[in-house]
Every structure is written in C-alpha cells, then in structure tokens.
Length: 429
Ligand code: LLP
Image (cartoon, rainbow, N blue to C red; front, side, top):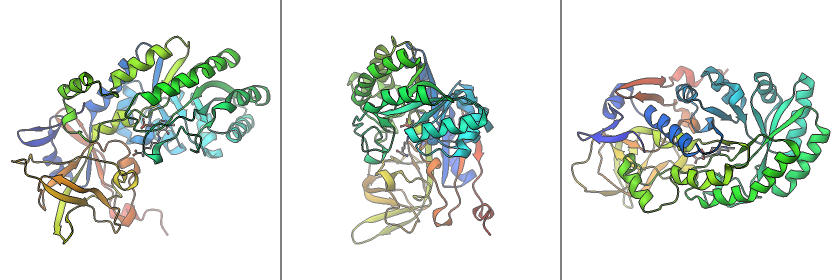
C-alpha cells in the first residue's frame, strides 16, 4: 500500500500534487510519502507482534536524514554498513544502542567509531573479522558485542546480484562452520561478547518459501548457540520483496485484499503468519533488517521528457533523469512503472524506450514498453523508487545529485537540496 494516486487526473503523493512539486523544485526529483514509510513500519511491527522483536531499518536503502528521523521517531533501530551510515543515524537522532553493523569489510576506523558509540551488535562476516574486532576492542579496553552472520546456503530465487545466502556468495560464514567458530571465539577472544546470530539470504524475495526454509534450517543451530553461549538475539535479516510491476494499482487496500484472496505469497501479513509460529518459542529477541519494504513503494522519481526521437528501429522518449539518478534498471534489470503526472485521457499506448541523457546504452528506464504517449515537456513518475534510488545515485557524467522532497499529508518540504555545480567539484584540487 502507498500514498500515490491520481486525484482529479493529477498524480498526487498523499494530498500534494506532484505536478506542482515538479514545477517548484525542478526535475529529476525524488518524492517520498511519510505516511507510507511509517505505515509500512507499523504493519511489519504488527505482523511480528506475536514474538519479541525489534526492527533495525537497513539504512542503505534510503539514508536521507529526514527519513531516518521519521523512523527513529517510530522506535526503529538501524542496520548500518559503514561509518558513514552510523554518522547519519546519529545526526538523525537514532540510538546507537539499537544499531547493528553489517558488512564484510569493516575498517579499523569504522570498528573504533562503532565501539565508541556503543552499538548493539557487530554482525561479523568472517573469522578474520571476528579476531580483528577482538583485537581492536582489546586495544580500546572495550568489549565488542557480536553476532556472526551464518550463510545457510539457501537459494533466495532473486536477481543474482542481490542473492546473498548461497555458499558462492561472499557473505557470512558457512553453516557447518558456525558451531566451531563460536566455540573458539568463546575460548580465545576475551574482548568479544557473543550476543546473537545473524542471517540475510537476499533482497527482493517475492515468495515466502526461502524465508521458511532458512528459518527452519537455522533454528537448531540457534537453539544450540543459545544453550552453549547464551545468545540473546537472532536477526533474520531483511529481503521482503515489494510490488514493482503493478505499483500504481497497489496503492489501494482493495488491490491488497485481492492479492490476499488469490493467496499470492508475499504480503507482510503472510510473512508474519508463516514466521511467528516458527520463532515465538525460541526465547530469543528476533531482529528484522528491512530496507526496501519500508521505503521502496514510498518514493518516486519525477522526471521530465526532453525529446522524442523516432528511429528506424525504435521510438525513444528522452528524459532528464539518468542511470546516475536511478541505476536499478541498468544494474539489475529492475522494473519501475512509468506513470504520467497528468492522467492520460485514453488507454492509447505506444511502444517506446524511455532513456536518460547519459552516454551509455545501458542508460534506460524501460525498453520496448507500452506506455501512454507522453510528450516533451510533460513529466512522468518512475514508481517504487524509494529504496536504492537516491542512495545509489552518483555524479556520473558530472550530473548534480537530484533534490529530495518529503510529503506529509498536504505539506511538502525539501529534505535535500539539489546539488549545485560548485558542490560537484568540492574537495577537488
Ligand atoms: N540486511 C543486510 C545484511 C543486507 O545486506 C541488506 C541488503 C538488508 C538487510 C536489506 O535488504 P532489503 O530488506 O532492502 O531487501 N541495491 C539492490 C539491493 C541491495 C540489497 C543489499 N543488502 C537493489 O536495488 O535491488
């Protein structure tokens, strides 16, 4: 469910007309619905209410300070992957004691910063890292709370770049090696407090089966670690998939009711229903690390059509956003629905490629897609761009980063200024 819909023929975010935002702030422009973000947070919280749990929002999905602030106010913790993300969380008023730190390559500076801030847990991805964490903590006279990430070797059935729970992925420690590692750590690493176990099998999972498989496979291991090492939490990671294909329609409760009725697997309620009974008697705090589920459908990227080019093979709609602003189609063949900001008067469609201005053939938002025949000067929304959109934007082709706006009911405020040309060369000599 999300806050984007046509009202009197104009695409709105909550009560705000996106046409007005495009005119006021220019394009490309990211716009987020705060009600959608908080609504998703609450629905997930509710779905897991049968088990002691905490939600650590995966900051990497969207790290705008105002988004973090909104989630901190809801009581979210944060899953970070760098010192930079910890810095953002602290700036946004997040509590370090509710932060977990993931990632395979933490540096001394990052470890030191996180230890000094007193984070909840380092989610460690190798024995080498665990030993280094022990060493750095010892040098600082501190104890490092830690969980090891288990790689359960389960196929998440998602795009190969965002599958993380197979043995050939770089993430985590082999399932079979975990018990011995905890044994060695408890004997040899005095500056480590083994606090939990973590896993995350991949992102954009659209069926419940891999989640169940992973939970069932790892449960005996978790029980054993609790018995032997007194661990207190199990993080089952993030990965809950969202709707990309039908993203405008999916704004309504009716659409979701139909989906439930058709027993289409992955709704948040079905996620809760499947997992809570399997987790509730473990006597552990269950941590969740959702990123995309919280913010994905809560954001759109507005872009204006600059030109139309009819070639012998194709018709191209050239827009002012590029792969530097939203790289998901280029990198993961990600699908984002493309919706005119003014509702088209008819169902007429044309077959087009929507492309950006970047000098790369991979710079497209769709290829050979049937879309309303929007014209130069008109704006469209790239839907479901709230997760891994701005967060992955770059200055490639020396294009300034787009602005970001947060909508709350009938009001909209800029939460990141459009980068100007001076900022583009800041720090260069
Ligand atoms: N926890 C860990 C350890 C992760 O690595 C990730 C995502 C998450 C949680 C959050 O996953 P989510 O709930 O958002 O699926 N840029 C890609 C997605 C990369 C995901 C990386 N890890 C995309 O645009 O599809």
